Length: 113
Length: 114
Image: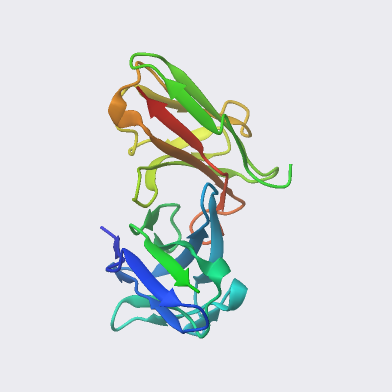
């Protein structure tokens, strides 16, 4: 069975500093990987996705993530965060060719002025 | 509409009441998902529809939960005889494809059972 681990439940960071949100997954088969963002009282919105090809994926709002198959990781990064990036971030995995998406427990990013 | 629409946004029910939550997906999206999100947790899969067919209901916590999508568009999640542990945000998502495509989420229906 597939699983997703987001070890950091909360990450505080100062404005304009870099940030990395960690995501590890377990799967014995090929997977697709996603990062979603959830602002307060809103639904989830896709930040970026990895399906195949280049392991470095760029998304919206200046975020990027790198797929590392050997370490089964898909960490999310941003070189300089803004106050508006304060939100909950969810990593998700989907087994290639199936409909099942498994979400992590989320990381709350708090950007401090 | 342009996005996934869910109603009601907020629902307070007394324990034992029945509730119905509605999801209107993006037009043309064949896949529809229901997720349950408890406070401080990630979304947990409840059920999946491809058009009007419910292909997977393995995530429904009990037989008090029932979902339908009779015409392959609007879906309703019904919870009978609500209990306090049913309190959560219920998220609906749709996708043109499943397994590779982006999930488009509604804003959710927050259910509080007193």
